[in-house]
Length: 464
Image 1: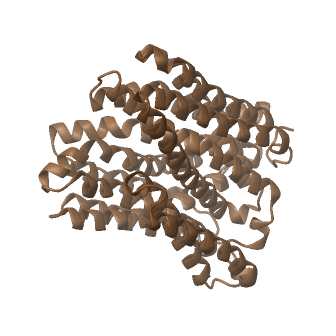
Image 2: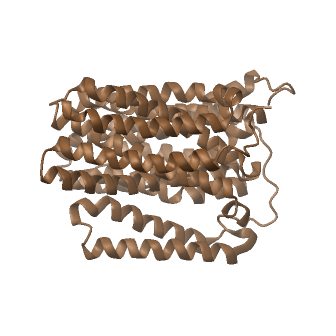
């Protein structure tokens, strides 16, 4: 699909557009529905706790099954996985828009999560395969940039549709966008199917990693309501540790049919990349949750105003992600990883130092620096991780990387919430925010040290 010189032809460009649209619709669905939760709660006459599972059910299912989706894409073909996932996602979206009860809506959100978990790693694998090796950074920038645009536009799209039509149109909109992405992919993406001798599925591996992740994500999600000392939280965390530890043992015994093969588990560059992504995701997800809360609770903004107030972070993230690819080709992964990690350390630290001023202007510099860090770090780290493995593993690699983002986000939210709540109990919400973001800056600093010392030396797509 590309010339010998590494140039990108028309068919490849169309394929990249299709991949970008598909990522946009997945990422948009994470954030667009958030602003509609009050209306869903009202329409179904249910509690906000129940309505919140409209968000949680999708995110939890997506995060838990994405590794399985990545392995299936590498085993049976990325086009197949993409089309299957898109069909599931689109049909469940329409069904969700027509849902007569909150229980039915939550069920269809689970099904949408299954579709998304098949789509995302297939998209990432097809995107890296569509581009010449020297443009691998462009693939990471495109996917993360489209995701950033989707996340940033989600609250605006969701708010407009909910106000002018109905929250149900948030789901209906997925159908034409997904259908167009599938049509272009069908016409323009013709990559060879993988030649795999053994396509048997590692069911025990799927079970242990999925249930272990469910237990972990539920524990961190419910810790604020139940308390960290609650026997249910302790039990979930213990179950998660045992299941994820047993997953490693199961994979070693599974051999060639393992969900995560030995060459992936044993790759040092890939493992360290995942570790740094986990640490940085703890910071990023905490910013997404608590900065809007600060704008509403301290500055008196409305939910829509708070969503717009987050644009210095999300807008910079989206814009910088698209230029991270060309910068990767010119500067190489080491410089970009270090710079992105440095910004992700400095941004939260700046917020913690200026939050006491209790003005929106005081938050903007920290948000801009954090957004710059996210936009540089995530595409670069994704490219480093994916290219550290064989091309046949790219969908699985992308899925594992995203799983670490989800896991890092859950851990970060749990820790940040605990620190913020304790500090605010003896003072104000601002006191809690400052303490929490100091913690986040410390977590990011550990990630910065790992990135500077260990990462970016061996990436196959480095300049030269």
